[in-house]
Image (cartoon, rainbow, N blue to C red; front, side):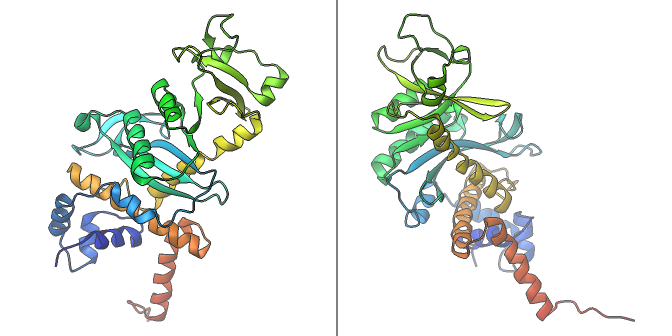
Length: 337
């Protein structure tokens, strides 16, 4: 009997801490470690599977948001795994060894729900593409192929590039993204030279309603709206948007807060699916494991929503079921002398 995608995803769904092929083979007499390895090496799963499995679940909103961000699958203690490269991790606040994944999430602001709809493996050594290229590709796919209706794109500082921002505008979409404090801007309509955004002066009205600026190297008459958003006593973000009609710093802050849904996705998928746990060296096996982990997150999220509980409670519930089963019909009987 040969393993299938359903078999492997079912294993990732139910196992709690050990996600290895060895552990799978040890607990399922139908499959050996070698047969599982051969299956994952032979299959060619892509992000297309994600869309096929999630599109009927998505509840659209007229104000729908798309959020992009990347995450590093930690392989710091791995040896000779293909796709692994040294790269910056925001969570680790430094350079680590890992596999970079650029993710795309659809957010319904009316219900607060979100769905992973696409992703790309960041490995320029094999395809020559930057993270910006991957985001462009996913945007094109969203508009031309998936034809998903959305209004606004949310991005992190890393993606606040001229080429991507202008590309989003060419799709007639709105974007919100923070820019680095040393970005050169002009708020004087050309009267004064460009200077760092962190050096701008703000009056009371501008703090509440934002200000029009020109970003250095953008087209001559291109303007965006800039907002100074105080995130915490120790952090201030400078957020730009091409929505010139936005006149509220408070509303801008609420929009930007939606981007944390993708951070929630990163946290949940790492803690409940074993997406970082595969230690096989083959790039194809790593790609297939990542695809299956995303499919498992989609299914667990669907179950959690139906049960009105967190995805963590859903995963823990499998252990609860096992405990109930063992109390009813124990595998090992307790005895006294």
